[in-house]
Amino acid sequence: MSKGEVGEALRKKLLDDKVLVVDGPMYFLDPKALGSMVGLSFQDAYLKKYGPQTLEYVQAVIETTK
Image (cartoon, rainbow, N blue to C red):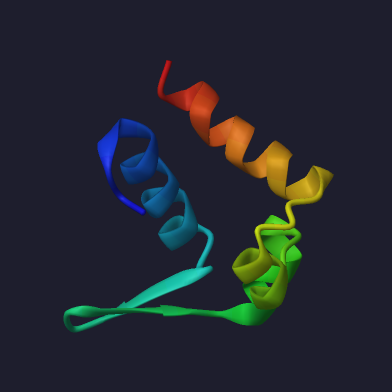
């Protein structure tokens, strides 16, 4: 996930929004935060089904890297 500038920016945003939490060397995903902040369920992420809220979230991150 954190390959390249966009990946690192996305990881930072997810951490800032408390969607990801660091515990030692591990990252943990908060599924409730994923749904409320990113508009994505774990199952939809697994199936690569991205709705408008998710696309807007990622697009905003991409814009910050330009």
